[in-house]
Image 1 (cartoon, rainbow over the protein chains, first blue to last red):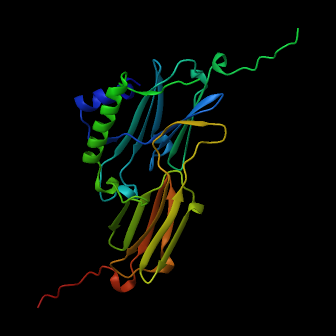
Image 2 (tube, one colour):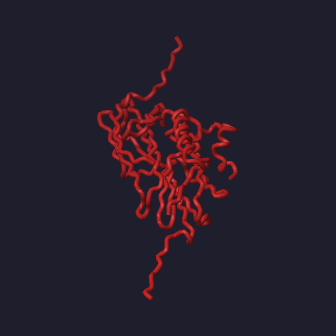
Image 3 (cartoon, rainbow over the protein chains, first blue to last red):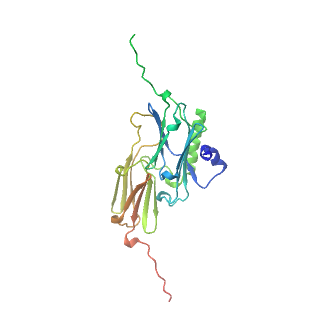
Length: 123
Length: 147
């Protein structure tokens, strides 16, 4: 966990053989949750890790060489990104799903943040 | 309720912009050729010769088999497709870096291929097309006769 949270710093301090790329990310917000979508082509579920540490949500997906797309390039690619979460989220209920090279992270808002309808009673 | 999502290490908006520009600079510098900017509306691809086949591959995260049209005619491979990116129902976009793209690319193949045995697979967001070479284009071992 500690390795993935300090992204930029470890990169410069100890360069690894893997190429580290920062994948494109979309962030959407609804009434109840945030949805983070990231492109991680060639990454299998077993090679993906998602971490939450001190309010920072990070993910890292490793793309193994041997994938056809990299056969001529060699070396593995690490897709890595870290975000600071806004306040008022329900950290226990974060869900991650990886399908066809796209990661979806659902980050539910805490009940207190959701807009609430307040009924007006005629006095 | 507007909440700002910030990248790691970006407490100041001005630095954020600067950092992003620097990131882009380094990304461009470090990325392998396959990721180098393709023309707008295009799709970066990799082609290589495995000996018995030509292998094509492209990163197409989020696309399904229905999003493509592949054709092979007169030894020209054409790949067409479209990726749409939009906020899901009930969601508002806060940040959109993933690009929607419509592409159509054609490749004149350098050797004759066997269209019948050509296969295309889509796995983990990577499209791979394997085009076996026609019999006459296969590499052949030539025996040396000692005189």
